[in-house]
Length: 194
Image (spheres, helix red, strand yellow):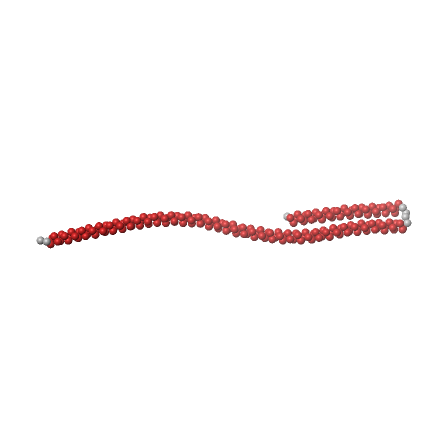
């Protein structure tokens, strides 16, 4: 867009300079035509000798040459400037086109990277959801393990209480068995005595 604007401005400037050159050329042509008309009027209106007419012709020719030389000199300078400007702007346009091409390739690369990032973002989103689900599952398993540990602690207390009760019962049974054995021994002794 910038290149097109610069090219339009440059073309407008060239057109303006060409128009000014045309106006100057028209002015010179008008002056030449006026001089030629005066010369023609002079020839028709008066009969002068050949020397005077030759002098006037030389003067007119000299004026015409001066005018054409002046126009050519100005036009040549303007054309030289325009050619230099055209060359400079052509170089700038080429540089701008290279810059645009480079920028375009960078934009395409960035778009490809963005597409990859969107894909990775989707994967990360799925991983986050999976991680949240796994975290909830881990918390549920941890709660279950805590309940199992509490139940195991209760069972361990019950087993210890049962072991103590069994020991106590065994001690009582041994005591009762010992008492029974003593009584049996006493009964045998009593039975053996006459």
